[in-house]
Length: 177
Image (cartoon, rainbow, N blue to C red; front, side, top):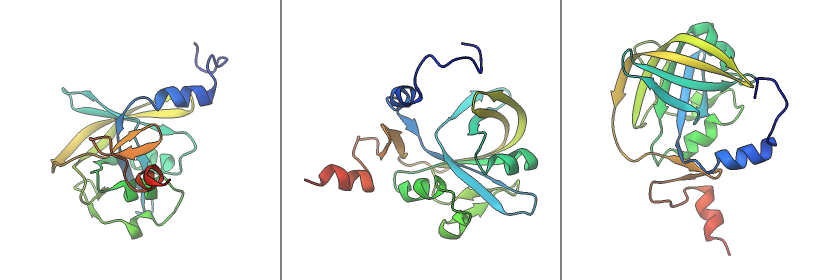
């Protein structure tokens, strides 16, 4: 299908299909021109290249974090731990004060990184590609920090741990009669 051509699959059906794929959960962060921190929860991320070290993120065109990200040309990516589903939910909102309610550290490039995450990378933007309703942002990895632990995963619109146990609200819903 050519980009912008007629859809062959309904958006709801496509979302249901994509929900069958287990992904990790990350928070992508940056800072705007005034130095204010911005961020969003994202699972459309992937390692792209070892040499040079590249990572890609796919950001919706209407995401409030996109403009600051493209202006700063920098982003941080924090891989969330299984204990951080509340942070994932916070950064999935339009709340403008996300960092007030979330512990973070400032990385070497000046971007915020989520404290307690399994690991962080800091990237400078190497390339962007327009693709449908998203912008693919390819980042050159400048710094990495690995802590380890168990990841937060996302499957069928719910946060889970690696054992498949629902976490947070999903667990309460699963246990209710």
